[in-house]
Length: 190
Ligand code: HEC
Figure 1 (cartoon, rainbow, N blue to C red):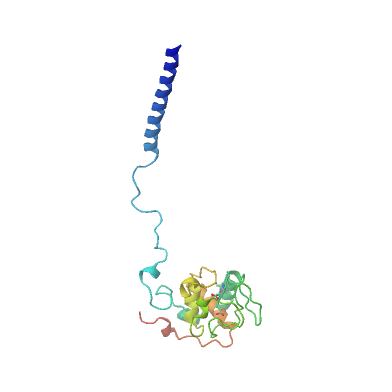
Figure 2: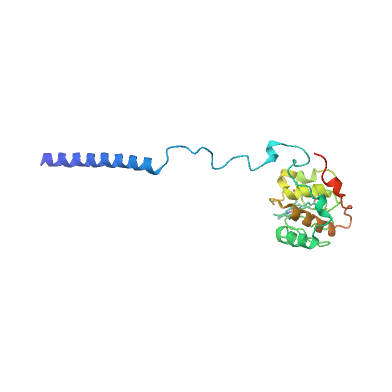
């Protein structure tokens, strides 16, 4: 009787041991012991030149100028982009109601934070001067880079042609918009 119990116990131990070994071997086979040579996600790289080379213009040198594109920009295409991408927060008609963002009628050539009574962030209010084409270009490329702390929760329009079209559209609804920049001013010597 007793030896039977002992046998059982021994068998149990043996089974456990074998299972342990097999599991270990299997684990080695299934999971690569080596670390990958490169991290799958590279931190900090996404910010691109912004972190690497700060400060050449309002948001760094990475925003492609649009002045050359503005003259031939497509206002209707810009309006359609604006309605799709900005319309959830902005209205564009004269006297239109503000939503999450301010009404944008007349914004080009107007000061930052152009609408009386809208609760702008200090980040945006603190910007000097009027909205000109270059400022708008940087702003719309990446609002959070142009005015860190802004309340405009919009990632940005990375497509340069789209930015030009949208800005041309904003210009078309801004009676006080300044004249378009000459193409040579568009690409200042770097
Ligand atoms: C999620 C909502 C949201 C979206 C989408 C959005 N905006 Fe805004 N926008 C805001 C807010 C909020 C502000 C005020 C920002 C602040 O005070 O920091 C603002 C401010 C602005 C201003 C400055 C207005 C002024 O009076 O100085 C412009 C210009 C502007 N947005 C253009 C656009 C355009 C063009 C798009 C689409 C490409 C867009 N926004 C998409 C919410 C939005």
